[in-house]
Image (cartoon, rainbow, N blue to C red):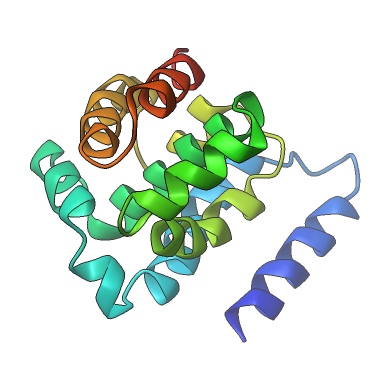
Length: 156
């Protein structure tokens, strides 16, 4: 039901007249956490060691899942498909986190990583705090080659 409401909201905003200023950032900021909250409550994501580590940054579980998904989706575009597949297969919880955070990522479409973080209610400076935690977590499960590819893909 929320997806229909969110989709309707986005479609309606596209048809807004020029006399109304469309503040997409504020709209997404208010909608994205709702979408992530509704999905991020699955047991496997709630118990994720990675998300628990990220919570030390003072973010909510939904922000941790959404921010991780944003960064992993960005990394996916920069890594070889086989490398990204290996990363997500060998590193626990990444597929679940990607699935839970996809709602927020898809709402923010082609927005920059910084804008997507802002849409999740976080400052873009959080990217630099998320990145080493995600990288160190993955390093515990993947080969040095995959870790190096992820590190390069997460360089902003």
